[in-house]
Length: 174
Image (cartoon, rainbow, N blue to C red; front, side, top):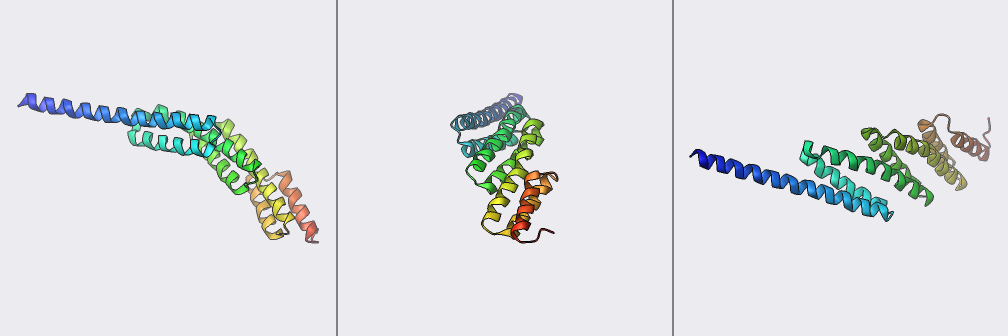
């Protein structure tokens, strides 16, 4: 009877170990997929692969913490690269969202360099978006966006300049 219990318990432990190993392999495969996509500058694809890898790691718990930390660090910097790419394409809202995600993920893993880089760009992108709105005579929208830039950086010169130019175009210099 004890041999049967021992055999069943050994079988169960073996199955759990195999299942966890396969899941860790799946997380690693998603990580590697993200590396290839990142290398090809498909940042949104890399982000999706790494988010899936992190999800698998979270399901595994302690056994996958090291891989999860590695993936999160890559994820934060890739959000940053995606944000800059979108900014260059004048997709301001997407760029801001990606950079905000970069800051959030970078702060979780203690990557101050990426968090600071992303935080520097966010008010500048808001200000650029505001200038674009001002050029389209959407003065109220532009002022709101300049205010958002100043929430991120109260000393954002571009936002103050944009506000001044907007008020000038509205003949409200006072």
